[in-house]
Amino acid sequence: MTLREAQVGQTVKVVKLHGAGPVKRRIMDMGITKGQLVKVIRVAPLGDPIEVTVRGYELSVRKADCEMIEVELVEEA
Image (cartoon, rainbow, N blue to C red):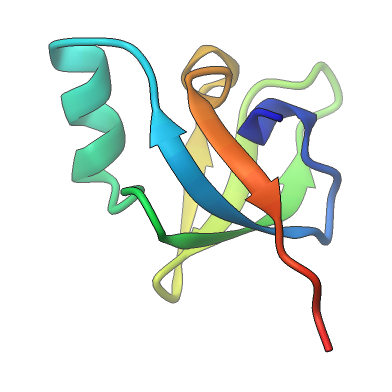
């Protein structure tokens, strides 16, 4: 599953980053790295951008970048 497929309100764990070069670097510069928890807080009406919380910061991530972030759903207690 990719970050783009995650629903609003879900918390997911980053499993793998796809892409290469500047794209992967841009994603990592936002603090989105393997093992990091990401919560989807809002999706724009047309699906771009997707707003998430990472390490306590709210970020807007491009839809194309979200497709390169492989995630798994975290079961909340």
